[in-house]
Length: 136
Image (cartoon, rainbow, N blue to C red):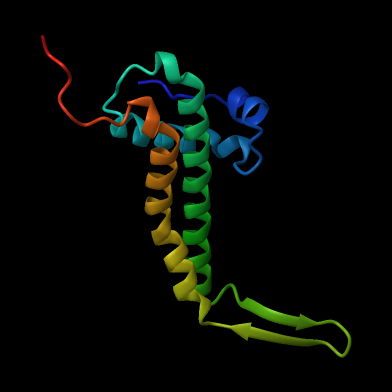
């Protein structure tokens, strides 16, 4: 199965800036797979642009999720401190350890956000229809 978008589409048409070039293929492949499963591998012939844009949005969400998970590991291991405030004159800094839960919640919300993006973009296309087609 091929991906719904390539790097040219992501960077030039969608104007994607979030995902680095060397990581794009991985996120586009996963996003394409998620969408393909949601639309039951239907033909997207009349909806190519909306499916491509949705794929880009989902890829961005997946990339963000990975970033959240990496930050969770860093905060949990103590290699990253979360700064809640900072003052430059007479140097002052407050470090919080309570945002680990917030980072986990952001990561968990990704699945919900992906579902919302897919439904918002593809609902009226009929690609998400799960019922029985008219058989005559």
